Length: 316
Ligand code: NAD
Image (cartoon, rainbow, N blue to C red; front, top):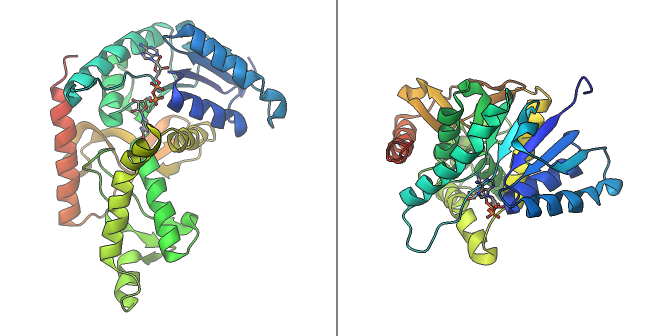
């Protein structure tokens, strides 16, 4: 093994998993990419397909369909495996079935001797990340989910468009559950170093908080709109996963709204939820404390309560 080898094992080679894999290849993020799926033929076919693109990529990667034993020396195990909701099935029943899927995944990963970082994308991502933490027994810093990273990217894109500013100069987050109770803490939103609240106040009606609320609603409904148009979403989440993967491999200490375990943050204990975390080679090093208003704190608490309720409804 070369000294700085970067190995990712991807479990679940469906649309999300393969969008992640394709983006990993295009951005030359790792040296080894192992594909695992319950459908072994599919994983093998996906590995062949990606390998045929290697000659056109900028880097050199070893891509193959593998086994759980391949997780032994992996740096990251990314989980995108899941089952689809059956007609009439409740959210909790779906969650229970996905938990059973995760039992068949996390146990063999841990049995391999894996000591790296789990990155979970399967929905509902905050709960499935907590399930992964519980099943693996790993330190919580090494288990993270995509959280509201994609929602935050959507928000920045829309705000950039609204203010005609490069989205990279928009500093704003979507936090909470990756789902209906997520929200934008506007008190923390900035264009460069200027609060968006002030920009709206000073704009003499050109920009308004009413429009801001419209934008946060668009972010909340984005997945649904895409699903209505093309059945599922995958490119955006694949890219978000690559962003998190780069932050880990590069030991970047980047602030990303990943789903991570709370240890007293605004009174939350044990729950996994999307808040700005500092992501480095060891996973989530630290959660950035924000100065939320009372109303924003209530929204975060409400979101955490929803996640607690679902998690405690599970048989683990
Ligand atoms: P998909 O059906 O295309 O792929 C799921 C894959 O999981 C399939 O290839 C299936 O064979 C595999 N699988 C099922 N059980 C398995 C097991 N026991 N072991 C190994 N593999 C198994 O679904 P998708 O569109 O790729 O979505 C995957 C997940 O990602 C879903 O839960 C979806 O809701 C979620 N998602 C999350 C976000 C986010 O922001 N976090 C965004 C989009 C989708």
